[in-house]
Length: 268
Image 1: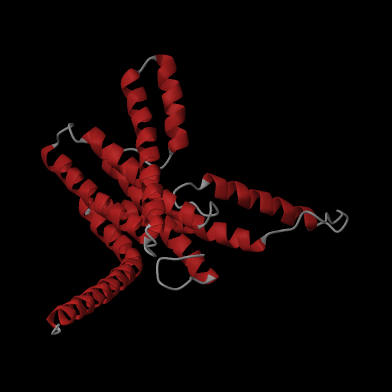
Image 2: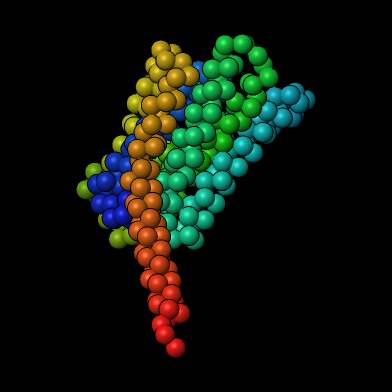
């Protein structure tokens, strides 16, 4: 499990990272609802809205729902491409770079939202919604790729389903008369992990709703700051490593130049 720093993360640290990312996902999603009146991580709902509005012929809402889904996909593509590119460049900060880009986009969203709130212009409304969907796509992708699809930081439907499946096993085995199936076992760690992720998402939603009610679009600043802090260790490591490599290569070039100069200065 390669992590954001120069060392490998422990299982406990990996769980807490999932909790923190789910907390941020809930905060962004709930805060975004109060900002643009849409849950920008709920793509199932937007696809259903797209189908319904296409049937009744409400083309404006249908186009908006379609653009939201496309923006989410583009955000996921952007984050995944960034991670792949950074790995190809042998950076240890592949996930940290994606987090920093997400934080930058969050600050841009805050500026656009502040402009929208100040001037009341509808010109920025649709781009703001699209940008928020783009950000949510990025946010979900980081944890999904890092955990190989085990943890998603914005979509809780799968977690609720998996908890229900595991609870059915618990209830089944509570009766002594039920036979023990060799290929069916209760996954207690999965229940704890997914319950923690769901709880973190809900708590983050409460904090996000409070933040946007009290602080308005300034609430994006602490969210962006947390993302910057999460990526700082790995990006700082890569910067230090590349600087040392540059100094080493520069020193070798200088030594080679001195040797060439000494050769040319030698008497024939």
